[in-house]
Image 1: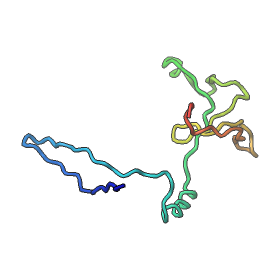
Image 2: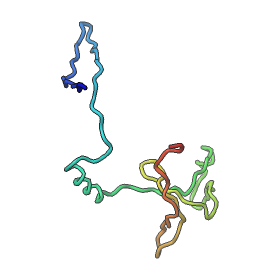
Image 3: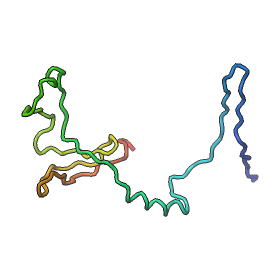
Image 4: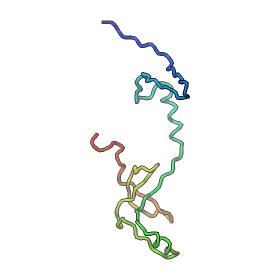
Amino acid sequence: MAEATTEETAPQTEESTDGTVEAQEVELPESSDQPMGEAAGKMDVLFDMALPVSARLGEASVLVRELMELAPGSVLKLDKRVGEPIELVMRGKTFAKGQLVVVDDQLGIRISEITSSTPPGQ
């Protein structure tokens, strides 16, 4: 059985006389999800990076009129009930849920669930 060989060439573009550029399709090599060689060991530097995490207590829909009437002492009712899980969010995505707790004189969240990163049905 003969093996097929591929010859890599740089893609070429040609500019037409009216100034538009014609693009050509290029075959790219397949990529692997597995870390390769030396780069895999360099991932450790990422573990010391800080990322902002937010806690989503709930949401409310407010008319502009009501928003303008808010003042110190006003109460804004959220859509969550007492005891419902609080969502932990990073870069707009919920990654965990938990319960609101008090730690010394600060608020905290006791993690009860790490949400799946796999889309449903996969």
